[in-house]
Length: 352
Ligand code: NCD
Ligand code: ZN
Figure 1 (cartoon, rainbow, N blue to C red):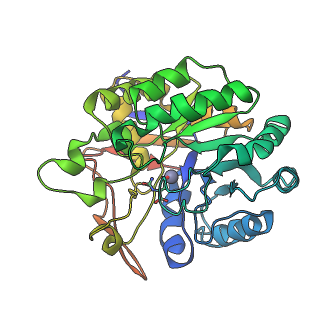
Figure 2 (cartoon, rainbow, N blue to C red; figure 1 turned 180 degrees about the horizontal axis):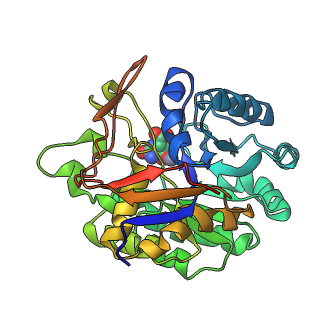
């Protein structure tokens, strides 16, 4: 399909880091401009582990949404070895909690409170299976002796597969899947397993941060892999398969914290993610499946209605200019540069 205009249900972002305080104030308007809802990651400092924290965090996010935007934060709880089935079960009864996020301890930014011993969280996971609350996993093992490029595959073999055999009713999202093995695993599993895919993993491979000098603004976790994996991700995302949906994993860090001896993982994309994704679907000749990936498959997995409002995307004759950096009161944050021009303009003022 080649088109210069496309109208779709308003998209959602099923994996988003909004941080807090001045960073949150700076980044929320970019998400709320283009997305109707977002699954909000709980890896703040301290992490969001209780219902009360989630309620407060949600209120803070809503205050940062500009008046002319409509945006619903979908809250998650951070699973720790101290979480109890009772706490998670009663938190889930409050409609604002849509999922629980599991970080293997040490896997990524602010994952220190995450899980070391899977046996300890089994009772919580059993409760979640019972009440139908999805588990969102950061799918990488953390053992220091496992090559960073193999961590997703090993997670599937040693953690995810055994867990799915043990609790087949548990609904699981493999967050930000990055390998062909991950894609194939999700594709061949039953409907209780789905995956989010980011914009940047559809666009960059490992050369982006390693070749021609070290490029910290293309460094994120899981790290982008070799080209064959990027191609597998593009095929899955653009296929229309209901198991794959968009989660930006937009993860802002101040430039000073990325450009240093031990730079933080995370790429800030919320400002141009929708333009990037639309361009990818156009490049693949699959614009007809864009709505499934960004607007329909996610709500279907979560048992929510698709947004009723519509978004129009239309092609401009000149490339859209995004800032290279945004300003926050703590410093600048670099915007993801897809290294191609984006011609797709987002228009949310569509007549019903
Ligand atoms: C995320 C962050 O900075 O919070 N970083 C990243 O590289 N994606 C955490 C995560 O999702 O792994
Ligand atoms: Zn993330």
